[in-house]
Image 1 (cartoon, rainbow, N blue to C red):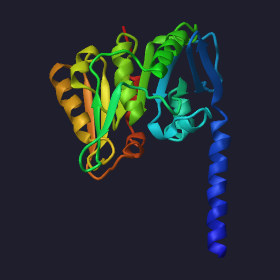
Image 2 (image 1 turned 120 degrees about the vertical axis):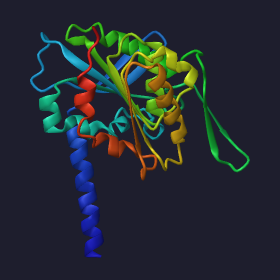
Image 3 (image 1 turned 90 degrees about the horizontal axis):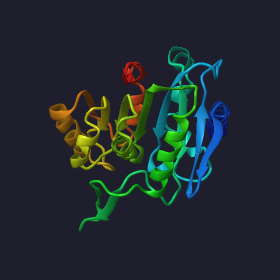
Length: 260
């Protein structure tokens, strides 16, 4: 009984500490016309509005959708709070949140005869409601005098990686580099972001989003793209973001790219 109580106490302590850390992310919103999107934003330590900083937009997965403007920090938020990351990569980091009933990308979900979920991606098409708002938010941030337009990055996991591919093709000239973890896209869309350096990750045992999606994109980009890195974790399931976030060169690779 004592061990159970101790475990519960430790769990609540960890959750409390995470919540306290996440308070360093300020709350914000972008509302214009019919567009509205809420986000959390982390400014560099000793932020100086007279300087220019890189900016990173990170898109969460479907499990973190909602309207609490908090859940989107669960995966990835702690990475950007690490003291060495904040010291070595001073950047503005933005985590927008997708509403519960929306989706970053134009994707269709069906079930086959065995009730296994199948995903297909739209070629072209109009943006979803939240993607349209995200595009407006992006453009609004790029007007800020303290944002370095040569160092604009996007990344995401699962549904957020699908949104990453979609945002890359809809705003193709804005990003210096991107990362996509366990996502997917229609390979016919690749021509619209083949010039953007991209690091793709996936778990070989992923039973939620088929790794074949990432493999197909990586193989196609290796033929037509300017720069692509692909990391397939042989023993990882859907949570391959844990391994991706632990990659020692992840952020140094990302921030090494600039648009000229």
